[in-house]
Image (cartoon, rainbow, N blue to C red; front, side, top):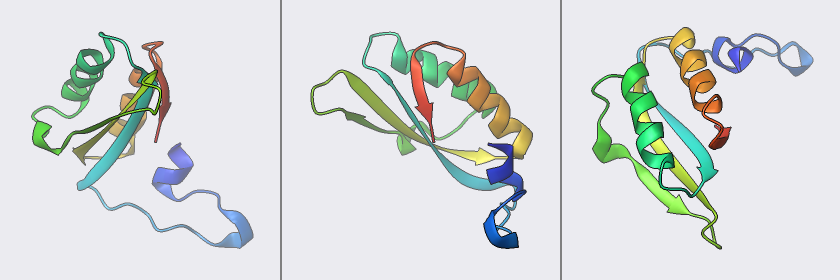
Length: 99
């Protein structure tokens, strides 16, 4: 993930555009549609991006209702913040993917 944030790597010698911080940054979190999922995800986002605007949250259920996706826009302050957020979300055991 750090390569995407910092612009390291890339095919054909081309550097992808680097993100300029701070910036509005959407994060999509996918996981099992269980009661604990939403509050746990919100707690982790509050820890890493205190005071983020909860009105920006969009939530979608999967077709069969087994999974849930939450897209949350935060003010990203740097690659370290995003990496730590990603790690904490994955460590829950409830999050399947973070985009």
